Image 1 (cartoon, rainbow, N blue to C red):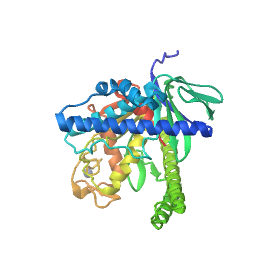
Image 2 (image 1 turned 90 degrees about the vertical axis):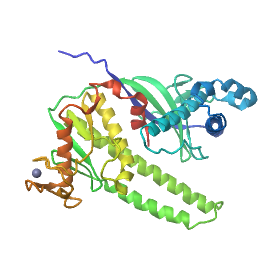
Image 3 (image 1 turned 60 degrees about the vertical axis):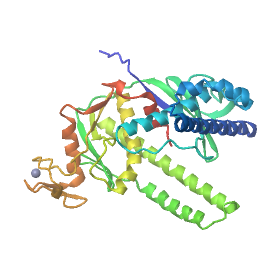
Image 4 (image 1 turned 135 degrees about the vertical axis):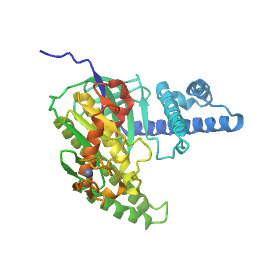
Length: 394
Ligand SMILES: [Zn+2]
């Protein structure tokens, strides 16, 4: 008997673009205009609030676009929805800012974008199409594209990205879920600094070595930049370029590794539990961890998106005390954790690798009710652009 699957999810496909010199000028100019618009709209919001205590909304600012185009005709050369998307992006930044204030944390005020930031423009709905060899964008034209893999599903958005002098397009498509066979296994995953993750089944996933090598090269390259104090020298510019390229390499390697690790977990398990990184006061507050957090949230986003596609479940649990609780008897105290690597229970004497013990606690916490679930069971919890980000970055 076949089951009818109606669940869809979003998947990003990124391809290299090969614009001509003339097209590159147009693209660079459009990025510049969008960055200016972003910064001016940000300034306007700040001024309106400071001088009059008025909060500008997305619609207030969108209504100004015709006026802007009259005053600055160069803005007529940018597709309207692309400009609207810039204002929406700013609106999102503000909404996130206010949400975090409400939650009681101290977020940074939305920032202005420097000349090397905001290196993408998004066609959120229409004004683009793609064929075998060319990608069409309204107000830009047909750009040569290399489709190294077939697009699937229905294209929803197209984002043109500039990355270290290279151009890419990322299409976010709506694709149908492809459920994987069930395995009957549920697993808890503890991410850490010693191991990339340790599962409750006792699987130790090492941090990738190749990335360490690139990071070493990156440090060398960064030193080379700081040895060249003259900001306008050609050699310094070259060294800066080398650093940027290595950063991109690290990001790509990490993304690739995250995809592979997530694929494996989703194939082998029906339910995957991990700590909810968004819960504040992790109780483990050390710097190394917070640096890794960035990478972990990308990994968890990829994991959630793959699980959703495969009909598997991801459960995020409260991370509190997962590293201090004995997985055998439940006794919880700080002294149980005798070292970074070792866990010895003061009550029952149970001794285990600390991360393995934590992974078991994470799984135990996921099994009773009350955890946040994402995956095919409750697709409404996964916002589409969240998924897009997870697959599209890097
Ligand atoms: Zn115990």
